[in-house]
Length: 125
Length: 136
Image (cartoon, rainbow over all chains, first blue to last red; front, side, top):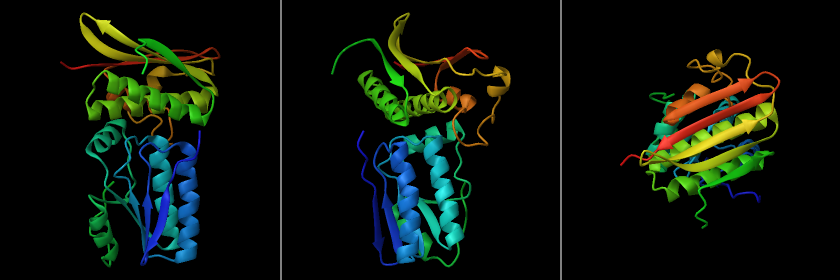
């Protein structure tokens, strides 16, 4: 199976990361490496993970994303997960997956607003 | 697309997890499950396929479109000849396995489906069957 496309783009001082609809394990693992490398290279304030296209979010995906968010935090950046679909939110909750305090936003716009706040107002898990 | 009513997907590598997921997505869509149920079924199959890959190394996902008293449903069976589960009751307790955050989330997977049966024998293997019925 060929690798899927993940986009990691710097916009001003934010990293915008967009995930494909059905990311496989290799893609998810690659994402973590690319994000951390981009953090070092561009020194952004934070990271917006756009999952609005993601149709399936399983335990491996969630674990890697929360791990990545933690790593980004250790490097001094903040991560906001944006655009989770209703069907994915329902499924993740019933399955028992949690994001361990990673910030979430309804849209990429709101994620950018959150990153521009001096401090996160609330944390969702 | 073929209109077969049963088939299987071998699970021998990480790539096969996504192959199983895609096959299940196509099947669930073919049966006209709603988007949330499609997501539930695909996610459950991803977890169960991953358990096979993680704990047994290899196995098979069998699928069939079942008809019970006029109700149409999708049945998925995940079979492996791995180490088996020593304590199924413990494995079925809410929260079990989720602390590791990877696979083995049987209680969570059960919540996504209508029915789940686990048959396992230490040293012989594990078979997990799940079903989702189409609501009329």
